[in-house]
Image (cartoon, rainbow, N blue to C red; front, side, top):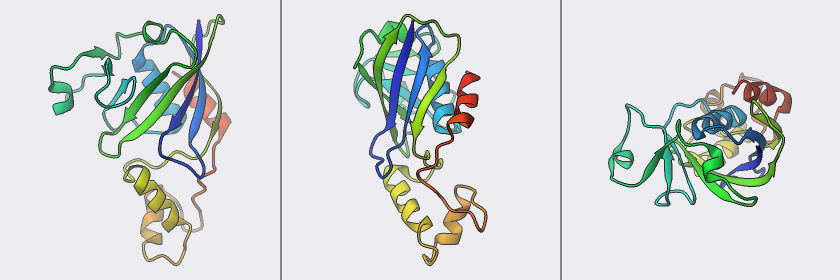
Length: 191
């Protein structure tokens, strides 16, 4: 069994940031986490969780960490991401789930199960995508909007400093439309 997921960053528009992935149904949520990290270009620096509707919805699927904060220490129902398989949770097309990455910046991703196919895959695949993923630690959706505005205005007093954030050289420009499908396919196929 293979799942086709559309995964879109919430609260990001102009352009939206989304990816379409094929993922083996026997994958664990840990492997889905790694596929999402690769597909979006995140660096896996922060804590994350899966849940049906985001915070305070259950079941919460987490990868326990030495850096567990108060959220993980509460006696709320939770499942271990390395032990919970996708086919235990996803059962029908149009089912939605939320993936939250970085509880400070609060990058919320809407996962929509588009199709369930009989085809068997051994690895995840990225089929399509749109939009550049925001840089790590840029302040969430609001911070990303601010960063895009500053980077689009070479006369802005913070322009030079902000170019360093995403690692842009002196003559490089941030293009929020950029998405390199072939490069992402290679990264995701390693999962």
